Length: 97
Image (cartoon, rainbow, N blue to C red; front, side, top):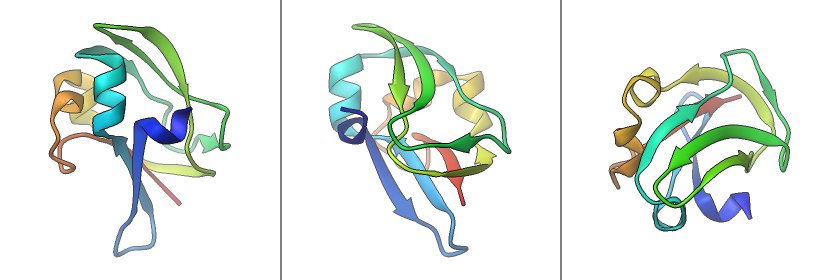
């Protein structure tokens, strides 16, 4: 299920950026709160990744990939409305290595 919520794109430095896609936005509705793991956290595919509070759901969402978080998009932690954007420069959540 989680895979359908996210896009994953390899960056020029070899990290992978993970963000919320259209299907995730449609399923969750407008996001009002997001709890993102700290830099240094190791993600395992299909294990808990983020907790979100949104218009249609309050839920934990599983990780679409394995890797170690090297960067968190602090803008969406401070203002989760960025997740409601279709702009991948705004709606990314973490970068993993």
